[in-house]
Length: 362
Image (tube, rainbow, N blue to C red):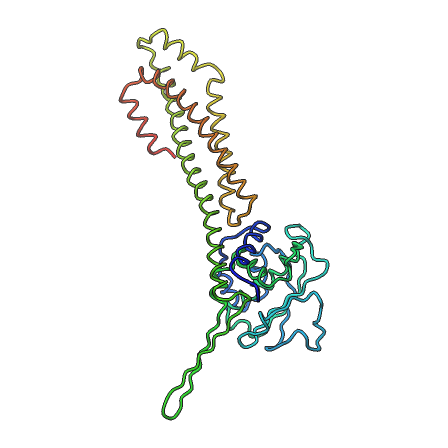
């Protein structure tokens, strides 16, 4: 395409990431395995699912070399142009029909919405290439369901598939190299034919690939920072729970061994430890942190798709963790002071036994 440079590619990526987001690489081994097993409908549904399209696939096969403009009435004006630039090794065909009543992207109406797909019978010959082509064609559905102004733009469609997790498999499948060898009487002649799929030149594709990887890495860094902070908070929580456990055991032990001299000031403090509700503030913060950690962990486990919304949620979780850490630290200092009072009246032997018990405590 004329007028397409790296700046155009960069702006397209920025626009699409702001609208759709960016995803981790798809499980290409799973998809390739489905192609090799000739489970084509399952493979296409999985590709659609990875693109955020929980659609139903009405699959049919056409002969190798099939053209959309022949006389078999497959001439819908909503038909996505296929076969990337009208060429393809051995005529691999993947065609997707876009209905006029296509629901909006991300809505429940898209669940099991029927989409007609035609593929050629030879599509299993080159699994990575077929998956790359199919991801491109279904990306037209993504842009159409978003009512994106560039929904008919093939460059934007290629990039949509790339940012939604297919950049690696497109990198592997966009070129098919076929070598033929002919034995002559005096020599052997080898010919190599390379077929390139897609609307991006090699330079443009690799520029887009690297740009998307950089954006993805930035989101992953934010995710990893949150994972690290969650682990740190889990360690602090475990230390905090062990501290409370020790405090309670010290108090129980002291109650059973009152035949020792306790200062009046310490006696007042120890009496306060026995008051109903004394441990409530400590138990409350533990419960709060445990619940928040469950939310954090659940959020992180499901996070393989990044957009502005997720980025803001990561920031919100980071702020929550900071606040919880502050509250935990202030309470920890107070509990440590209370424990130091009890430790004056607890023998070293008992403290050592308790320490060993904590080491084996889950």
